[in-house]
Length: 400
Image 1 (spheres, helix red, strand yellow):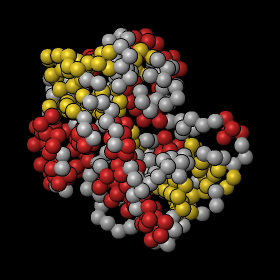
Image 2: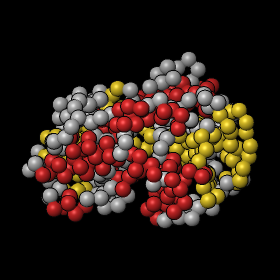
Image 3: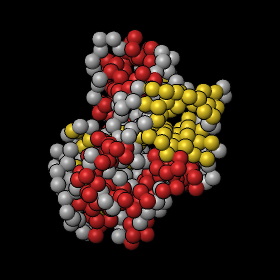
Image 4: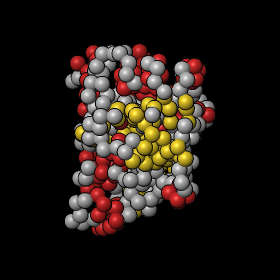
């Protein structure tokens, strides 16, 4: 029996190293080809992990949990005495007319290309959405030579003035913020991309000045050859839900020791609340059994108040706007097919939204928002990721 850590970002790596230092046998599982997660995108603490004897399974995904047995890709299973979930989060996007054109990317994809491959997605790039993640994305694009404009949909600077306690709690972030000073000349608040235009790819975007609820006040079209969109993050809850963990306000509920409602399952990082890499690392240490003060969540909690997704975005849609890209479900089809339906399963079956390859990871939060559903219900599935039928048919081998 062993400590199994799922996810090799800041939370997972710190949990694994901490548990190994305490003399525990540790298995670290991650779907990426190298350690670091979305934040570091490099071999973060890889030497230390090897030195502490942590076993690391690369390119491996946990696709189901039955009791304390985890099913892994490659027809393998592992039995966990203690499970630490550090599965992180993925970009949230909001649909708008033309968002399915080539040249429109998630903010995370833009950063991955710029930071990991030193490639700019275009010469004239628009970064739009809400949240502090827009700043490092824009900085990475500037570093690789792109011309950048940043449109933040909220009045973030004004909103932060209403959060003095959170600013004190997150004062270490000020140094990081200073590092993005080069973005300031290109940064504008209460502004959003509400449509993209082009033939074979995006050529122009409609940019709107917004009111406090994100309703457009004034619009204009400007040229762009790439658009990077990010409206915060959606926690990857599939495994936590499969393990039976309690979900509260869209995140995994944990106590001061990062223990979930399931006694042998712990959670750390963005699945417990979006708070950045520093908080995730601290949570990982505590989940791994290390010492440390209880996590101060005031800054993370303030992020949801400073960067909310307002309801006015729904008015950006037209009837033909694609909501679910996998199944080509338009706004009109979603509305028509789901009239009178209040259950997520019924919504999926009637409209096919969320039944494609991504299983609702891209559209689930959007559909939930449009239909007033619980977004966590889109992460409830017995098989966490798409797998070949051979994985189900095979006799799994116990991972040693």
